[in-house]
Image (tube, rainbow, N blue to C red; front, side, top):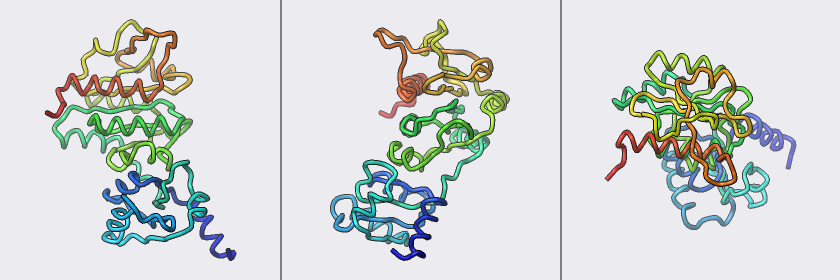
Length: 261
């Protein structure tokens, strides 16, 4: 490879993000997000790849066919399925946009607040569940937490393209801002007597999920309106962050009568 091509590849790696896997790339194509180009492995012309190529051509997205070795070299995840889309960095929204989303749907705000989630697989899973549960948005901190990257997009199965995600400087300040809009803040913590199903989530609600190893920070916990826990009957006394989030999110769905028949 000549020096100019090597320089271009390094710039793409440094200044762009990428989405990998067939379902994730297809969801990306069907959203309104910009796509710089799509790389497809030579010979990968079966199944959903046909649809990816067709939609990409319709939207005038550049398609580059490269060797499987090149795809694997570019990949940031283990299961790229022979397709990688190069995209501009994720376009985060503002907290106000999440509140506006709820207002436009004539619904009480339903917001997921993540206090220091570091594992991209957990973030991706939470985004996927939040989207299916009808949450209006997710709030994450700018520091000491994972942002939306290619692994998150892959694990979310494309849900990042349909979910409003705000990245803020200070979670505690954001919590107090949400309270001004009648959003009650529910923290998840094992050191409380209240079970999650004993609270009311039909009004405006923000569910706080703490970090994988340490839970919520002290200030965040102190600024929650109430704390809940999930009952544990086994010898293991904690759940994966994304599992905990999913259980409580679907209690919100249940109480609000949001099931489709």
